[in-house]
Length: 487
Ligand code: C2E
Ligand code: SIN
Ligand code: SIN
Ligand code: FE
Ligand code: FE
Image (tube, rainbow, N blue to C red):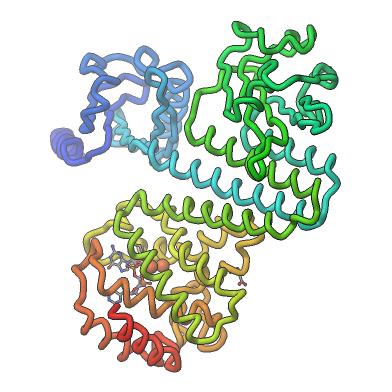
């Protein structure tokens, strides 16, 4: 290739991309650099030109880069690289491609994926939340022995919060003392004999004030923990304690200990409080079986709050989704009621409708928000959103009956839909009726790739697809419903 035209092509590419670009030598010298995102200019001052990557990047990253450059040089192929760049106390995640341009030049295009990654982590945490609720629910339903329940709760808390140790103290109603009931993660048997009056020590304060207590550095603030001289040897740094409240009574305190500093994180705190709330319900139930049903009702409310939280992950990316989801859910439940779906199944239909497009969280922005028609390879990715939802949600047992809609909402009556190409009655009934609500509402909504249709056009379209896309027996019911509801 002619050198100057390579040069020009390169310059043109650098100007066009919104990503961060580097031009590097195979040996690791930075020849050129462009960051079109202004917030990143402080990370790389202009003076990094002609420097070596080892002088510019943290050692670990420089090493990763050197390996990747070597791989490009040896294979002549494009090499992907995901890396993290610590800046002050933030971590920025990048997804990069190293592309051979000539023998002496390798271009690296890096995209900031920090936000995407956070959304994903948040979702993973929410899925875990659902699973903990489920296991607590099961424990209640099966009338688990109190000690086993406490031990299971601690296991869950430690895995979900990634903490080193945790205890549960229960308030003895006769003596009014907080007594050690269960603990995990300790090196010695140090807290086993703990007995605290209300207001005494960390846990005593939590129980008295009924509020979460956080101690950022126990090494400085050990007064609260004179429970045992051996405590010092545990080397704990962080302490969080939260009251176990049920029906307005303090049942005890849930505590967690960490041998390293813990960054305060609002989500994590909220989660800890929520887990404590669920744990308190479980403990209360294990103590008093007669209250079983009421607690189950409360758990069911907690489930639904979590499902809404999960669906909000998608709303975060696309403001219009929220209203779409709310409308589609409401009309679907109405339609299901009218068509005689059992009262006890309506909750699954509702949950399924709320979560129908949750799989879109994994669809890249360039595809989801593309202002025009999708290319074939983009469609291949878009068509995965139903199966992504199934994969994402299937660890949550109690959502299984709610998966019909996320899984099969794009199947068509004539068998040409996806992901399974099911036809007619093979498509679950809930998914068949949901499809009508989804398509109708999608059509009368603005999309990145087209403006909104009029209601009249949408109705015409639905009618024209009766027996093709839609179950011909449901179409008249649906049209009657939107008519009477002025929807
Ligand atoms: P969505 O926008 O929520 O659309 C849901 C379903 O409504 C579509 O499923 C389709 O059956 C129907 N629908 C929506 N808009 C139209 C339309 O303009 N004409 C017709 N005839 N039907 C429409 P489908 O086709 O499987 O698409 C699934 C998802 O894929 C869509 O959800 C949307 O997020 C995306 N998508 C579909 N077509 C395009 C496109 O041309 N460009 C982009 N960027 N995304 C698209
Ligand atoms: C969107 O508006 O992009 C997603 C909502 C939906 O299609 O069903
Ligand atoms: C699934 O969608 O894979 C299972 C849910 C169901 O069978 O209803
Ligand atoms: Fe969909
Ligand atoms: Fe939809």
